[in-house]
Length: 84
Length: 225
Image (cartoon, rainbow over the protein chains, first blue to last red):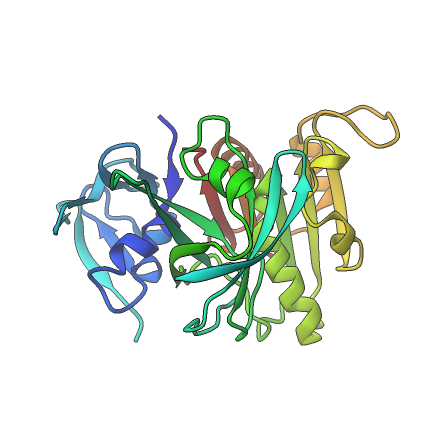
C-alpha cells in the first residue's frame, strides 16, 4: 500500500490544533525515536489517516473524520513537543 | 474559497491554475493547500496540492498533473475554468519549506510534478536576492512533461534527467545513485526531495549513503491517490 508523509496531516490536524503539528516532535512509544511528525509515514487509503514511525513502522496516531465527529488516537506517541 | 482567474497548459497531462483568495494570509515557499471538491450528491474528496507561488500576495498558483484514476486531479486539469470557485484550506505545513533568511547551500530534487513546491523555492530565492547556492535536479519523463519549462531556464542552475526520452536522443533512464552524486551538491547542504513515493525513497536513501545527514534531507511524497 502506498503512503505519503506527515506533511499531509497539516490540513486535517489544523481542525483540532492551533499550531502546525507537522513541525511538532513526537516520541515513538515503541522504539523511542524522536522526530517531527512531518517525517512520519502516512497511510491515507482508509477513511482517515494513519501515521507510522519512520524508524520502526509502529502506529503513532490515527485520525478519523466521520460526519460531525473527529477522533484522534495517539496511542503510539508518549510525548509531543511544539516550539512556540 | 478562491476564484480561479486563469489556467494554462503546462504539459500534455498537467496545467497550472491561478486562484485569487481574498483572505489569504501569505505563504512561504514549499507550503501546500488542501482542495476539497463536493459532488452534487454531497460526496466530498480532498487532496493536497503544493503551491508554486509564495509571498504575501492573495494570488496563488497550483500546478496539477492528471492521475489516471484520480478523483480530484482530472477535474482540476480538464474541467475547471476561470470564474469557477474552489474550496481550499491553507497555507499548510511548516516543515518542507525554505525561507530567504537561510544562507546555506540548497539542493532541490524533483520527480515529475514534485517540482511544484521547489519552483516556489526557486522563485523565492530569485526574488529575494538570496546569495545562498541553490540548484535543481529535475527528473521528468520527456522534455514536454516539464512544468514551468520556460521559466525554469531563467531561475538558475537546473539539471534535467529524462526517464523516457531526451531532447537530443541520448539515452534516457531513471536516476541512479552515481548520476545523483554527479548532479547534486555534496554534503553539507539542505536537500529538498519531492515526487512520487518510490522516487523519493530511492533518492533519500542514496543521499544518506552519499554522506548527507538524514536530518538535512527533507522529503515530500505524493502517493498518487
